[in-house]
Image (spheres, rainbow, N blue to C red):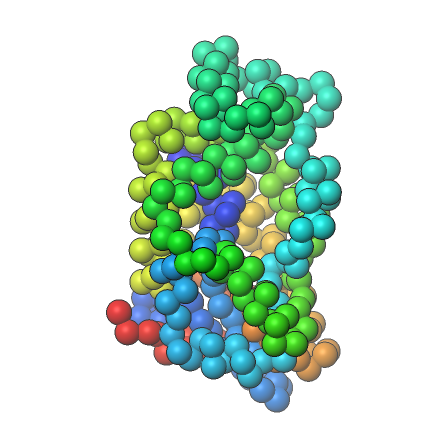
Length: 294
């Protein structure tokens, strides 16, 4: 079984074979009849202070764009919609997806880590329980910035500056990608998450992920993330979503003639059928913007 797809959920992450010298997080989108360029930036869904160590050109290019486009619009009102996706069918419970020994191990751990919330895990889809645990397990390695997660930070900043804020996919579409993972596989992911937390692996993996992100090496980011996912899950969480986001961004850039600052999880940038590749196939020129000095 692959190590940990749950990590992918909130890091939201990486793909494509590009020259490591050009393996950067910020890309200029030009050509194809554009009057002025747009920009593509790879983010992480964490608030660690290290991911806010921006190249000066990043904020300069952010300022001169007309609108901001993220994976989706993040809003507290979405909680009600999220709740509708959290639970398994009425005839399915967590113990049906595991051996008795596995179930007892997971329940004991969840009781310690989730408190009162552990009462709901028998009916919650295991993937969402895994996400909760992964975030908890990574907290010890994070260095607080006092800011919201990086993707939300840019969304909030765009609103403060009066930019139009656009979502490239809906919450329902994003949740459906995770719901496409079979429940028995989700249960294996949850079991692995519990075992990893017991060994302290979550903390180490998050630390490694942030260091790779700081290096802006998309090849390494992709290899780190994709090695923890099956081909089918990679297709659901990356490839299909990439095509939707690229198509919608293309429409906004061409039809509305807007200069966009596109900020999505860094895993969506590289690899065949990553956003860099898809924009190139649409006829755009993709140029990596100067990398900050290490």
